[in-house]
Amino acid sequence: MNEQILARHWLAIIAPKAAPAVATSTVLILARIWNANGAEHSIGNAVLMTALSLAAAAAGACASIGRAGDSTIAGTAFAASGGLALAGVAGYADGLSLPLLLWVLATAIAYGLAARYWRTDRRGTLAYERHVSDRREERAHIERVETIRGTTQIEVARTGAAYAEQLAQALVTRAALPGFDLKVLETTGLPQLPAVDTFQE
Image (cartoon, rainbow, N blue to C red; front, side, top):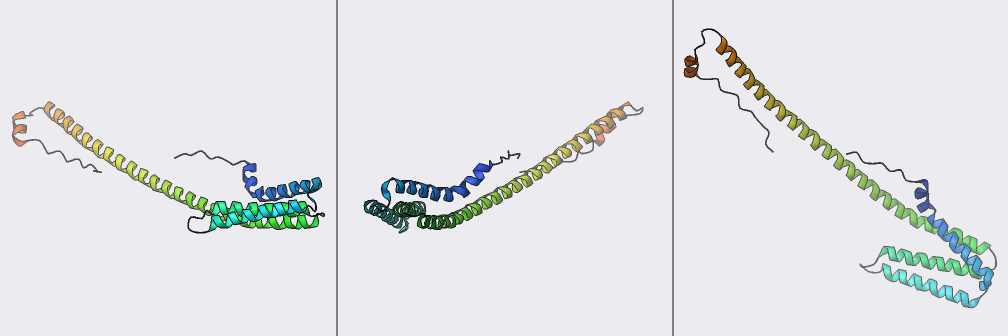
């Protein structure tokens, strides 16, 4: 019944929300480092990044086609394609305006896609918490009913035992009185004890 309540650390709460911005910022920083080391206006590097980006996009398209398509693999492939395209442009361009514009656009798209998954995850968490709460209430109700039933059985048994004890005490007291005749008692018989009702499962 008593479950331990664990408070999540603030970093564990913030980290998933910061992940898209961290990912796109990392790609931009690495691309600018690559730009400073000779990728600026390099046709070969631009062709390589374009080919890798198109290959990742094709892999994402193939992973999302048909009934056997996996949305996780498709999403990862499309994200890789976008990251490679951003890295290619940021590495090839000579100024910062175009890479920064693409970084803002990529970050906005990443947050848009992540918000959808966060919403779905939140709905699943709320549904699970509701289900657990309903099960707890149901079990608590069953426990209360069983407690009442057990208490009633004990009280009925105590009442029967108290009646038998009082009857025995009355017989002992009666036998001690003057003029008590055991033969008369045997001919008339003892009063019948009440049947003890017990609950059957």
